[in-house]
Length: 196
Image 1 (cartoon, rainbow, N blue to C red):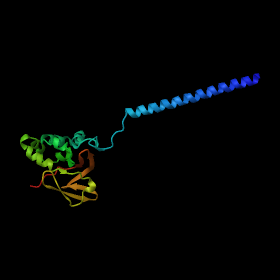
Image 2: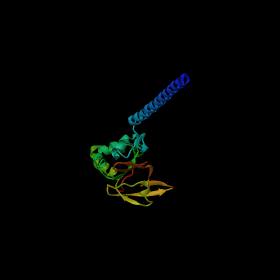
Image 3: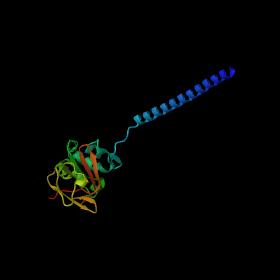
Image 4: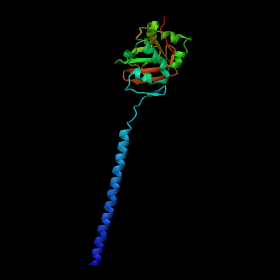
């Protein structure tokens, strides 16, 4: 009888120990799950985009906001502001913008950019900038060799494709298909100007 009593007590103790261990393990797993959930909530997933000028260009931002974040497009953004085109390029669109880099503007003859940014040159500046903008969203795959696309300025850009590289009026597209909420931007390595 005493043996049986000790067996029952031992079995009960063992059950309590096993139950407590399992319960503690379940609590640890629950704590870990809570920690993972809190970490996930605190750090949302970064939106996928394209890196341009040290910044992530994302589809949730419009063309102007994406360009303003790029360290390579400060001259273009200043020109867009001087021409009074910010609101237009923040509009619904869609637009396709061929965006020259700061280096592209630097290739122009000395003093050209400073001259174009003067208030009395607003008409010329607007003409040049709108020559870089096309109504509609054209990805690189939509562009064909020899294609002519009408710009907002009214003249046509000529597309050429050689060895897989897309060129617009001789300017090379260095970063294609930067998607924004109101269109597509293609970074180009030269400023293109309308033919007189």
